[in-house]
Image 1 (cartoon, rainbow, N blue to C red):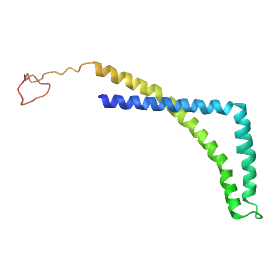
Image 2 (cartoon, rainbow, N blue to C red; image 1 turned 180 degrees about the vertical axis):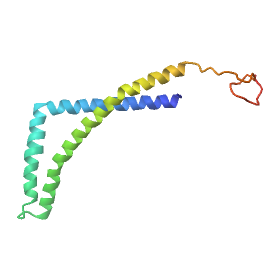
Image 3 (tube, one colour; image 1 turned 180 degrees about the horizontal axis):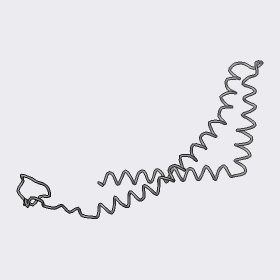
Image 4 (cartoon, rainbow, N blue to C red; image 1 turned 60 degrees about the vertical axis):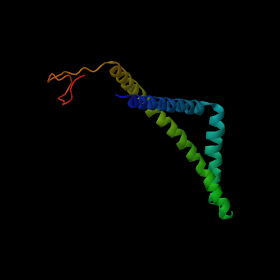
Length: 133
């Protein structure tokens, strides 16, 4: 494996570790009582449910109803985003060990000199018309 392939694996490893760390932060955040109470319960459940009702109220101006609907959809977007972070982090976490093994193998093979057999006695590993040095 060449240097650029090793660098690519190192980059993938760092990216996956970063995604795993973000997942861990999202999981910890969801467990914070104040976040759960204010954001998940008050905003995502109660406030956004009220906005859904406003979005269907024919007594309100269309612009107000449209704005209410967009606000109501924010809860779903936030929950999908948090879920995505957790899912992406889990996938990344599962790949970290595999990438580390690939890196270890690549680095080990980089340090091991490759030996070729001079099959035709010309000083080169394969048949060649060039003269040996």
